[in-house]
Length: 164
Image 1 (cartoon, rainbow, N blue to C red):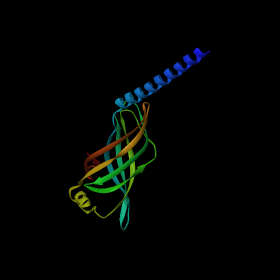
Image 2 (tube, rainbow, N blue to C red):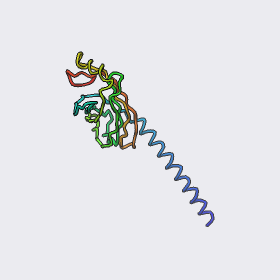
Image 3 (spheres, rainbow, N blue to C red):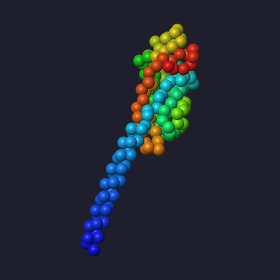
Image 4 (tube, helix red, strand yellow):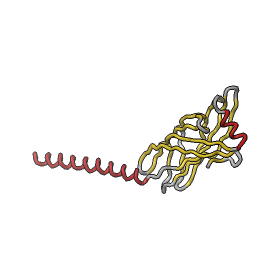
């Protein structure tokens, strides 16, 4: 009887060790096979103007290079035009990015006119402006949930309506 209890304890302890080690190995393997999505600026859409500022929808293209869909749970963002912060926020709505495909994500951004003069002049005169979009996103995958940062810079052209 006493020996049975001892054997059960050892078996239970062994099962706990195997499960813990296996779970850690799966998490490590999942991170190793997860490729970061590519985030690029697609367009700006002015949605409102007021006396002190306005609002724009910033449309991002999120490309998923993985062989499985990404179910985005949340996303934070900051949008800079040249070196000036245009706006920031969080998107709590879910969106799905199919395997080896892209999805567009619309981010609402409120801004003030103060400090945006040079960027606006550049866009009006040259038709282009430098941008930076950064933040992080949390995705649910078959390999677990991942929160990863993204940081993308480029040049937005009002003529073609997209970023590079």
